[in-house]
Length: 232
Image 1 (tube, rainbow, N blue to C red):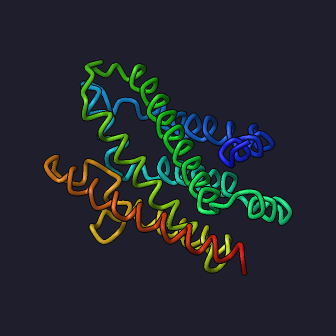
Image 2: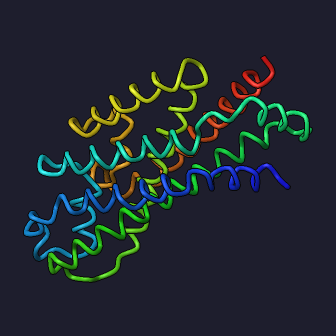
């Protein structure tokens, strides 16, 4: 059995918690906006998604706060500490120890994509009630991709802080970072680059390239710090 299969098997213990977070939080945040569907009247589907998930407005800051809080909980469940005996077993069984960490990184990326996809699906049902013009645009997919990558960057930052200090410190700092990005739209705040409405379409490739490099660098740091923690 590979380390990837073992990780999936261990996650079955928390399957109910993961499903609740991935479904309940996007659902609750969508229900929060039911009384504000008039905001999206007369918009196309892309305009509605941009208004809700492409930028943070004064009326939607609570929506984003709950959505990010659910993601922080998801990170903690997916990356919760394994038992010492399990970690020792992985170190003894597999000669390439970095795969153990790379698999954990990949699994969170999968669940991050699921979390964003469900959020967009719930928002779509909200727009149906708002009588939005149902006209598909490829930019909607690009917008979701940008948000997913940005959320994953935050998760990797959480893991680095958790490895260097503790999970509690990492969670507090991440929530502060999220809240700062929600309350203030500024280029020096990382969350700014997860919202496509904040920058021009011709900047998308540059933003994706830079965030891709950051992901690679942070993944390498996590594997390095993780291996060092395993052995020492």
